[in-house]
Length: 312
Image 1 (tube, rainbow, N blue to C red):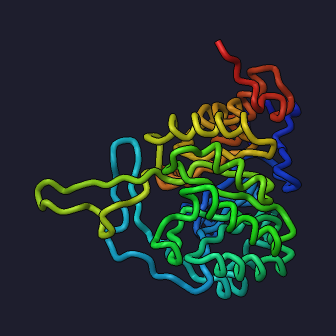
Image 2: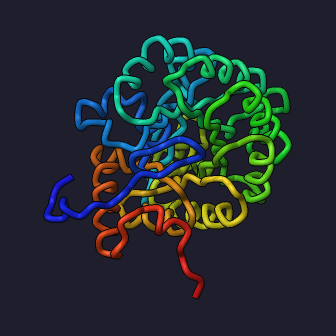
């Protein structure tokens, strides 16, 4: 941190269901890989934490290109959960993450409940993993491809089974592509989630009118970036008002002002994703900006502003 405000002591640390973060800014899953590339740009220990790419039991190549396309105020991606698989992650990626003084939150994804169970059991044995984020926006092959997070019953079943296997902080990542996100949030909390993070990407597509083809090989993709921020902010406020566990806000957070909105709406922490593609230093700029915001507001502790938005 720099500037003339160095002498002013401001606490940025937060506690997310026992997961102690030095500041509330996390690198979002899928946008920061496993931290190695970013470590060549800045000291990743300055982050509150890193959420890894979603890991499956076996390695996945994902969808063929084109996997990404730019949209107005955002981007669409159809990566297809490409990742190194849990064994390679534990043996090759986790040691690097463990060397850095920042929380390592491992995102897991599965096509069956059994796959989530196997992932949770393996990570339970990794003391360097203080928390997992369960990505339930995945097709359930046992139920015709319906996403686990689309309805309360499959969502709560996954979380309940993972809860039995993983003893530390369990975060359920919620999808916005549902009819009632508050109902699903309550169901995962009732079945053992220590915290919830939201939102995942919004389903969208784009068409090349000259070629008359879809811009993504998978036809549909996940929309992220500033375009979805108002949707995410509304859902975070609704969920934070309804559950008694910490909420982590995700969706188009690009500046410290964006992050402050989510904190005021009730989020205990935020994740920064798409903004990292525009400016790899975005998370650090947000951390410093939050500190300056607190000073301007006359606050010395970031916890003092969480959930304090006023109704008109």
